[in-house]
Picture 1 (cartoon, rainbow, N blue to C red):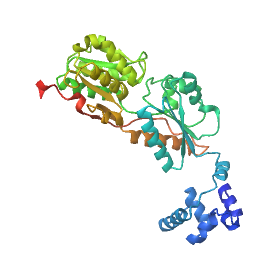
Picture 2: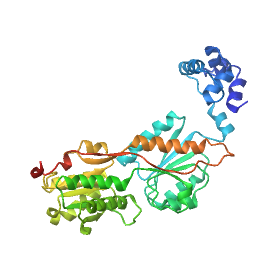
Picture 3: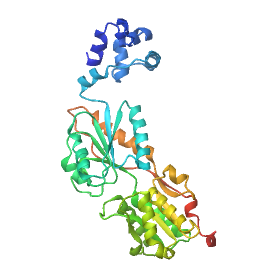
Picture 4: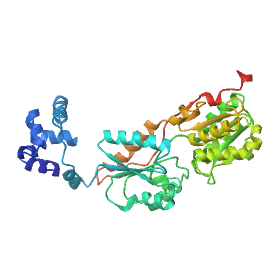
Length: 367
């Protein structure tokens, strides 16, 4: 008998039978006309239960408001039905939208989600990589920015984990240890750059370069350069612009710094929507028209970009696919039988789309 079954069975028909108002497993069984063992099988997803019986039991569970004894289940299984999502910033529109979807997807599978904000602090990211060194969670979905996948592999413990973002160091220990879920940043950058080039914009800048080649910003720079090469051009290295943060303020500051020579470019590819929104703000304040004088594009398809003036052209990752894949992969690790080998780590590349909006309309001469 499981801890769940034992706790409710010993309650003599559930706590409601003792007058406390709580519905027990025997209450559900009596109402559904089945044994308490059948109810347990439905709740735990075990045993063979016919579709009609399962539907009847689930309807009674919903009607009576029955809740299993989670403490007993956790003692029996050693699990908490809790996942952690570790992201750099919870105020980031991209990560907040992703967290919302992860919570929904995990909840549908019976898991709650705790949010950890690492704030791009190396020590915080290492603590996540080590599994928080606590037993309060079953698995981790982790988006690191300051440590590479190989570093995660070197320090991580046994806690199931899925990383968000490309595996940029193939052949390393991280190649064998950790699942990754991402979009193809290089391909997406080629597509957005090609969109500008083919619409008549030939003097492009990229905002959001990072000092480390395997970071997201530099992967997008790679695609920016490849699109130029494919069109028979070369990206001007003077217009590969760094950004200390992927923030609105950083985007606005970068535009202020290039204003004396902004007439030398006719397109600006930004590494995320926040940089692009800051750039739009500074351009508008300084009389630079978008898209007439300068086209601007972003990344992540945030809601602010959709309602910006002009509305922002952007790369739209499939957040639903990212969330569903990440949860599915981490739950698969959590639920594997203890004697079995863990599932082989994989790289999963999810779809993305280029959403062309007002901020990158072709110049009048090409219409």
